[in-house]
Image (tube, rainbow, N blue to C red; front, side, top):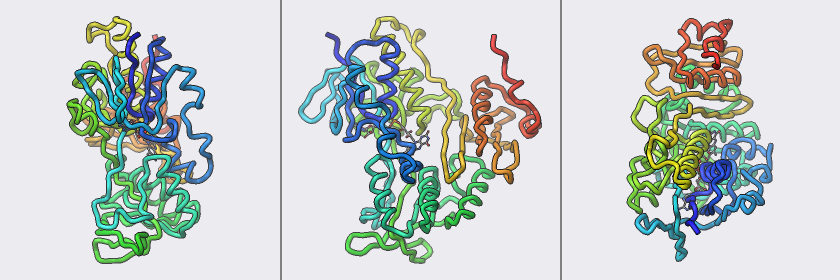
Length: 419
Ligand SMILES: Cc1cc2nc3c(=O)[nH]c(=O)nc-3n(C[C@H](O)[C@H](O)[C@H](O)COP(=O)(O)OP(=O)(O)OC[C@H]3O[C@@H](n4cnc5c(N)ncnc54)[C@H](O)[C@@H]3O)c2cc1C
């Protein structure tokens, strides 16, 4: 019997690999290890609807329990892979040795820790796992106010959720605008206005020097300018670092994550990587390679890894030319309060921004260009624009700035007609 495909990490990419392998008629054994006790679940609601009790825990699992035995996937929960022997093609989990035919590294990412005194106090939270979200939710029930450190997607989603629960919320960020690394200045401005109107206090361009407490419990934050601010609870959302320690220790090439080629293959031909942990070449990026932290990326990379593993397993892909490349348009969303932000493409290095619609009407899109080429579109409460943007970027179609800025102009007409 052939050795199984082994997956390290029971998250978005891991589950998608199982689905796509079975869809591609791969019928060999699959073994999935997850360091977490909960069966694979959706992470996006953890900072949104789950915090607000709009959905319960029953809605979080990605697949029902019966899925894994039905698909002949041996799911090992609460069992971290502790090392990998690339030469023997085995993973080790404690004393267990598990041989593999192909391996997927889908270990995700871990929250970046705030490097200040007091970050270890009880009541200081980060948010990556269901356990983290449970803890935040429980604590939110007990407090009147919280401090959020980091005005990125997760920080702002938590801030909006807490505010809608009636809490006093203060958000700090060292950047001078919210979501500074991800969106155009006009989108930041719109979100700043929205959060301020809803009663969130935004402290942009300001840092925390330490977190203070009493009896091990957080009580306040010390601002860099000397101000002391009461804090019954602190949520830190300052980004993530790829979980690549295991891969690096095994000898896989790592550099800001596990380095993969366009086929999602690592420096070892029997090991693939996908999702937040994978540093990959991306045809839509202005840089040679990057990591993306999104459901789209984890899902689409796992699909590519599955196609390639299935082809290799069937002996049908001896040549790289018969492997599948990763070339999906990046997209992402963030729900803050009642508003939906959707992003298509990658906007780094944009040198021109064009607005479509009216920001005062609370539904508009921002088209990002570099040297006249459409790079990305951020849409606020404009789901149709977002879907169209994905198609335009995929097709390499760049509407002229005047066309993009004219809401009456039918951008769909620019798409190539299907043969
Ligand atoms: C609160 C929150 C909200 C988000 N909202 C959005 C959103 O709105 N839109 C969006 O596109 N994306 C969102 N994301 C990001 C998205 O969830 C991630 O990009 C996606 O989950 C990445 O999938 P992954 O499989 O790479 O990693 P993960 O889903 O993180 O899975 C990795 C798994 O591997 C496990 N693991 C790590 N090491 C080992 C080991 N040695 N052995 C066994 N298991 C191991 C981890 O415990 C984890 O369970 C959000 C993330 C969070 C945390």
